[in-house]
Image (cartoon, rainbow, N blue to C red; front, side, top):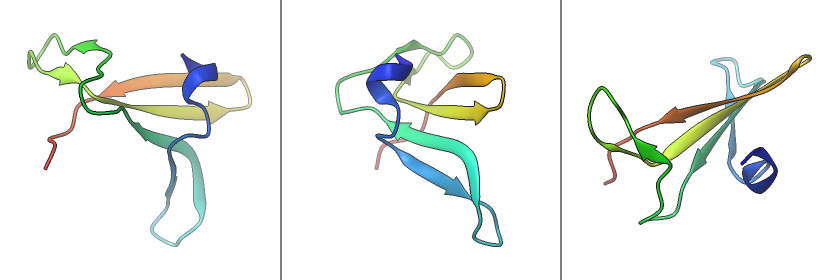
Length: 65
């Protein structure tokens, strides 16, 4: 999953404008990763956290406008 989506999202920025090591990725409409067990809603995005020790993928849900 990392190889498919890396560098396809937007890098987050801090309040002072400097870049963080986190990337937000929105999945295309109709595509989702699964169902959130707490809310029962489809997971339609993810955040990739980059670090010295590797990468971590965190699924997320957001309301579509």
